[in-house]
Image (cartoon, rainbow, N blue to C red; front, top):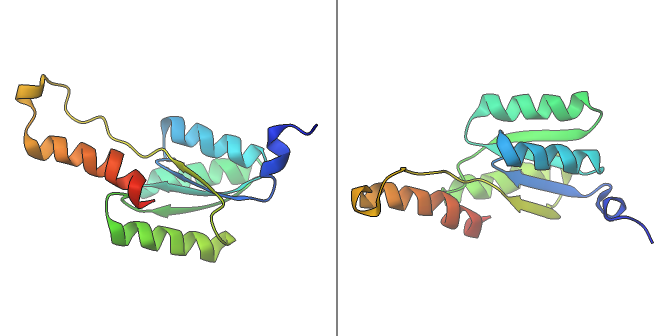
Amino acid sequence: MADATTDLKGKVALVTGSGTGIGRAIAQALAGAGCRVVVNARTGSNVDHVVQEIKGAGGEAAGFRADVSDPDGVEALFRQARRAFGPVEVLVACAGIMGPRAFGQDVTPGEFLEVLKVNLWGTFLC
């Protein structure tokens, strides 16, 4: 029986929130497994850095800056991914923000909504 990585060779993978941290590590692992990886984050310099890391290791990657809490931004992200590599076959919704570190009564509705927009709504949109 083949290992799980053989099933990924040549697949198009989009990893949101892959400019840093866990998302970055997942993007690198998918590239190592043979995926063509679409790197995404809100910060363009992070996107560029991860794309260069993947390419430097012999992988295929393209990067696009987009805010996953914005429906138009998500639509554009998937359109750019299709142009770069074809339809997305693997999606890792890793974009997320921490939000305020405070007791519930000290968090404003706007702060709470921002966390929901990125962490929940962004995943839904993708």
